Image (tube, rainbow, N blue to C red):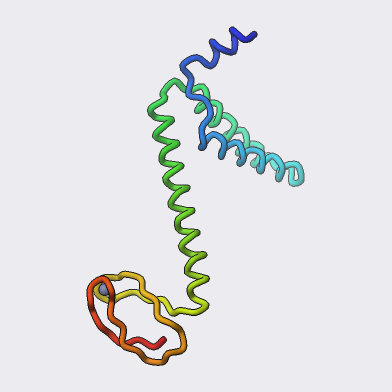
Length: 131
Ligand SMILES: [Zn+2]
């Protein structure tokens, strides 16, 4: 039995982060389908299972790693965007955020100071803004 499994998985790609993500999607969809019992959702689940198995048993390691790298990059961008948004929400409580009209860099000024002259720390452009 162990020999059979060893031969089955020899030179195969196996599981990666994208594979685990697809696993989670399958589990979530299966859980949803317990309640709504949709044939369409069954088809979608079957598609994801086949896609996951094709990736696991694939011998084209380079392509699978490229897919995984793309997934990881998108995930990293999403996390960075989320962190930026959360950080902006915290900053907006006490500061007003705006972009420099010349270099488009993000700047912040304290709220409630009225009309103030702002100098961009990146390009040195000065302009007036209401805070
Ligand atoms: Zn600027």
